[in-house]
Image (cartoon, rainbow, N blue to C red; front, top):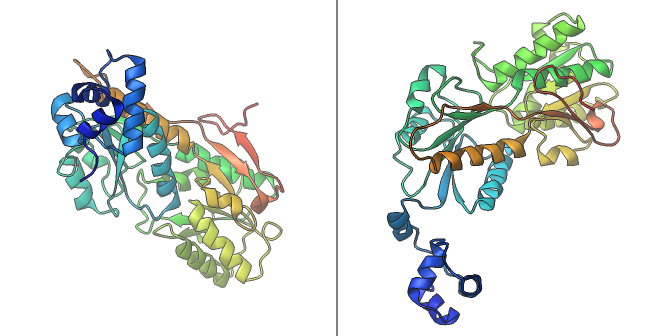
Length: 355
């Protein structure tokens, strides 16, 4: 048995009712008394009974985050940022991995796994635009990602098209013309997936630079893991297609590509410049360090948690759904010829550098 509320009361020299008032954040407790109770809680390692607390207040102080694949660094680092943002609001986070499985995602929206949580942050991978009515759920929900737009819930996403275009524009600015892209989706249909939106940005940047589109430079790669990035790069090298730059649709693909280029004796950035997407922590420590799109992950996490808390606390008539896209940036590192990291912030639409 762990420490109980009675143990906390004994150590703090107060009544069990006072401990309960502190645990349940009752406002009318003297500061000195509250400090003694909190000190006793820390000393004993007491953890409140969330079930009982939830029955009394209607809330658990816990939210749920559902993402496709924690193995992908972006989602692991996003989860870390969300946990930090939730902690600042006094909330715990339960993280659930769907594995990109449609049935699991449908189960989440059905609410079967949401017991003892107050709301859901949800990044689907297999649901699509045709499923947006399924987001009309009876619990607080904030959508993440790029699979569904125009639904009935708050949505925090990123500037996939304009940020991808800015990444390719950066490659053009350092003198590259034959730019390969790694990470196109295997089915070839243009949808609202991240891969399709980023390929669209790639093509827009080529058009703006007057560079002809070459389908041989667009490499299908899924899922977006390191080994697949390395495999795609090896196939591109064997194909004998001329290229002097690579835009990988996420950083893990880019890291795999760097490995394959190194194995083949191709110098980066002298022979081939490489830029990724997501600005994961590992990009800074790659050899060479990896230039990348910073999609504003920390802001995405903070905004998503804030929106969910607002929905949890909402009383009366619900406000209309909101869609928010934080600013993005290009982080220039050694893989595109910059010895020292340089973070250039860009605006939301045009990709123009801000002062």
